[in-house]
Amino acid sequence: MRYATLVLTLLFLVSLSTAASFQNPQETPAKPLYTPTGKEATLVGMITADGELPKPKKIDMTADPVCVELNRGRAETDFVLTNNQQLLNVFVYVKSGEPLKAYRFAVPESEVVLERKNCRYSPHVLGIRVGQKLSIVNSDPTIHNTHPVPKLNLEWNQTQAMGSEPIVKAFKRPEQFIPFKDNHHPWEKAYLGVFDHPFFAVSDAFGNYEIRGLPPGTYKLGAWHEALGEQEIEITVAAGENRRLDFTFESLKVGSRLE
Image 1 (tube, rainbow, N blue to C red):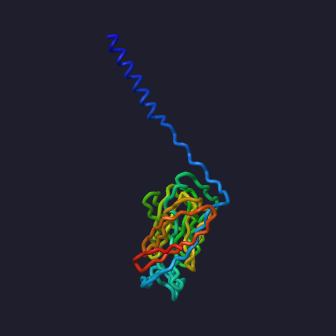
Image 2: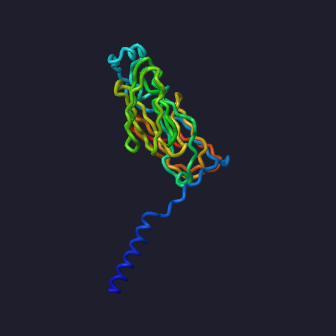
Image 3: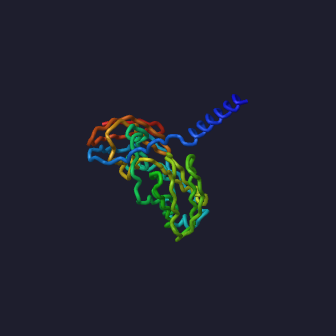
């Protein structure tokens, strides 16, 4: 009897120890906050288009007379925009790299603004940090609906009247790229990249982009366009280096050029 009691007592103590080990796992230390040294690298480049590109298509906006009036003579799709073959709305971003694994990066206190203007999303492509506020503003004299469709973050769907207060949201997880739509105006689309680091940019009206403050190291870099696809390249940047990296999208095929 004593032996049985002893065995039961030992089993009970072992079970308590095991349970405690599961309930109180050793926490993984938080990654240190990156402190700029003044010797970070800068990436600059130009995005160009080569070959035949998709033609703009007419948009039927008759469902909303306000949108028709705001877009007289220019109601065409804008998912592929070029300026003398210089490509706008290309997302250039760091996809991975050892410095990203080693550090966390301060989140800006400033808001990122997504505007509804002339019955379009403006900008059409934009980036934000995890936890940073996104402010959605309706500048049109009509009602809009904002409906992001993420896979890793919370989906939401909200209508916004003209003159109303901005819709303010934030995203908890990195995700590339979240489509935004408007259930009232199906031609309105945008794409949002959510990152846990600040190393991303969108090509401007001249096809240019710039990424500053990159710690020295080896990275995988991506260039993404909603219609022309994505291309990747691995680069190594030295302390204080200014690197030029151009990308060329060839119709529905992609290529890259490193200088």
